Length: 476
Image 1: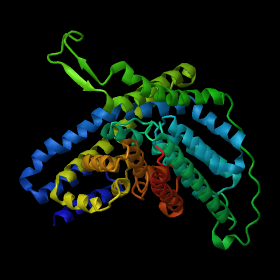
Image 2 (image 1 turned 90 degrees about the vertical axis):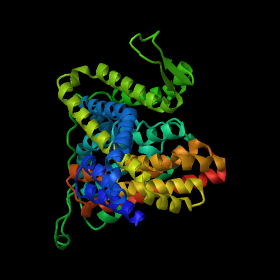
Image 3 (image 1 turned 120 degrees about the horizontal axis):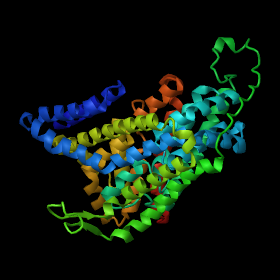
Image 4 (image 1 turned 180 degrees about the vertical axis):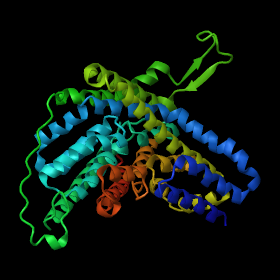
């Protein structure tokens, strides 16, 4: 019975997300409903002592990353840098390789620190024009955007500033550059397999005569041959592509440099005392290692924002106020959604029914496979990479660490596997990013989810490929 209560809570939250209801509202309802069925008297104490504690703890650690990433992405959009990068990619890669162009642009923006939600909005107008000019069926576009923004640059490529690569740092005491060789190998495998899949889909669909706008099957026999679309003129006054890339490069380089420099600046711990800050009533001591990855990303994004403002001030000054307000609103919503799921995970982990789940997952003998299956399963159920990973790590990180240490597996490898697994089955139909992507492109699940799911399967298999590579070679 206790297991069914946990399962019911998970299914309830999944259905609420699928139907479009706010996770901020329904995560506590699902969690406290499970507590009510388990021990009615514990509802209020659990809400204050577990749910809110976990939720606020997540906000304390990660909200600045959400906020700075959203502001940086909005400025990249307002400055015209994103459009310049797309135009340059089309020029140098070619319109005939539309899938590669879109994947590359999305990857550059995501790895450069732009939120994947922002990437969808920023890239879609140019992706739509590129597909129209190439007469590629529009319904194939979401698969390309998903591969570029929701996969290897989100959690696999070492150093990515996306939240999915940052969350494990606080649990495993690692950095965003954990297991660089495995991360690069996993990224190459995902990219190669994903592009091959997208090209296969493009050829097979276009072989039926379908163009940018779908043609009814009955009409294809009598429809005239499609004319080659005329390229639309490029908007004048775009910044130079190298200038547009500079803030993205700044974020990557600064992230790497700060990861190396911060330990030397602060040591293992740092104490704030009344000598430095007379208003303190008691000393504040902070252990540095768990926050190196977070501080490095925050510092890198700040430098990227400053560089964007300096180099594109005249383009962004008029829209700066409204643009940053929108970015802050988006950051608040994204952070609160994930924090609510984190609080939900903390409550579920405390219930007796979760012990059944933990014991079942513990039956998987290999530590890395165990972690990958646990994380990707919860990410799939919640429809969120960061949310599912947060739930799994809040409940089972100690178990993962002990298993890894017993098997002499570096925690850097565990970090990379867990991060990759979070971006595996997370993109099921109720995933917020998938719903946003389809809404922005004006397509439906029936039209385009097949291609998104293909990318999802490839990304999930890449996790186990990386695990196999580690055991065969010992590379980290």
